[in-house]
Image (cartoon, rainbow, N blue to C red; front, top):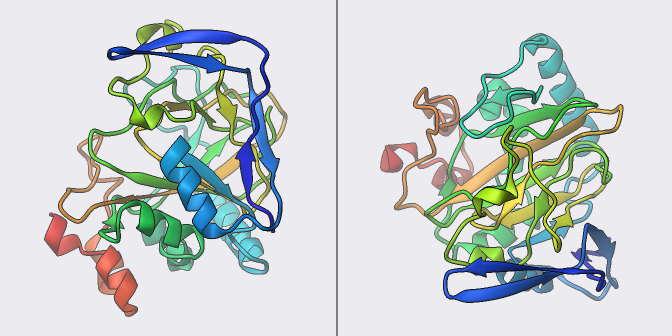
Length: 284
């Protein structure tokens, strides 16, 4: 299937100061557009390096996609309707459900650790020095929910995130918004990028990462990015898998270990590549 890259049209501009450089962001919301079949995985990797993200269409093949959708829905049903605690900076009105430690919850999701071609692009982005940064995270943003976070960047270390889409994500269904090329900038988003209640403001030049079920969004986490409100009546289900270099420790944002990869997941791996990715003893 053809890869996709954002297409910009001139419709306005907004200056942003980043360090000593004044950058002019041109355009408004742009959804990801199809490109010719001739564009290859190496080309997508170049886009990931240059603009900070790319979209891999059809990254989860059928019937695997159908199986993972069914298993995800089953986990959601067992999780009930309890909403997650709000992380620092999140919008208090956001109503979302997280499935933390997804690899622990169901081994069927282990395939998303190293499913090519998306995994190969993350591996190239980290120059082959790649391990898991967390234990897989499922996320449901219900229809009608506000954005669950505002403009931010994740760092300071180089991380690469894979967002596996389990639903079709249209522009009104809470897609990720990104500012192309901002992973090269010294500073993160300014304070005016988010409202007092944590909701993200529109930044001219932002791109909405829309896609179809089975697509995979890959991004450097230092890129400026945010969730957007889900104004549709349908939920948006995604799975996040984040990678790091082996010298860095795993994320443990809340100090409770819920996001970290467990030793049980590492112990059950028999494929050498996954054993390397789950090198828990080395990073803890």
